[in-house]
Amino acid sequence: MTGLVRLLRHRDGTVRSSAAVALAGVIREVEDSKTLAHYVLPLVDVTLRDPYSTVREYAGRALQHCLQNVTDVSILRGAVPPMVDALNATEVEEKRRRYCAVQLSRVIPKIEHEQLLIQSVPMLLSATIDDPNEDVREYAGRALKSALPRIRDKELLHKGSIALAKTLDHHDTKRRRYSAVLLAWLVPKVSELDTL
Image 1 (cartoon, helix red, strand yellow):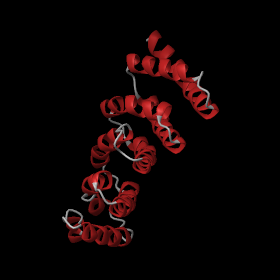
Image 2 (cartoon, one colour; image 1 turned 90 degrees about the vertical axis):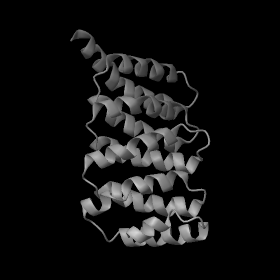
Image 3 (cartoon, rainbow, N blue to C red; image 1 turned 180 degrees about the horizontal axis):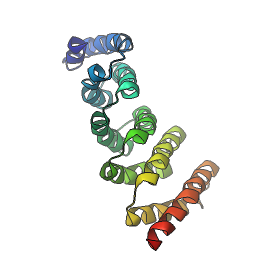
Image 4 (cartoon, rainbow, N blue to C red; image 1 turned 45 degrees about the horizontal axis):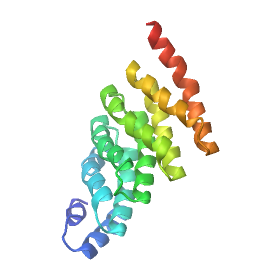
């Protein structure tokens, strides 16, 4: 597998595509968390940055398997910032933003590092409210819903409450509904922190 991962950096896109397709097939046979952990960060980079859609798609499939099976939270923490950044990068196509949102909805529940969650919330909130793609909004919202209970930063939670409250006037019913669900949890949390 290491040779296939190295080939994902080859200058020829056809070679990278073949390596990504092969890696996506081979890596599914590996269940060992420690073995898979070595591939997470290189696969995040390729999945988000390669100019060839086939390379991104199959590297993403390999990455998904890694993220589901890696138990080392420090490795998972390293994968979060580039995926969160990709949610709001205007040059990132919709399919990549959706991929990142889905993976974040699976990884964020495993993260206990409050500072990383605090850094992720503004972009998750923005994607939940503003992304034009419904799937991106939904999965970013799931990640956000998982992150918020573990944050005790009163100012951040208050700002999030205000942003979500403004969305209650949005013309899109699903955005209003999801904002209401998040607010139903968030407002009591902010009130609880105010009384501490």
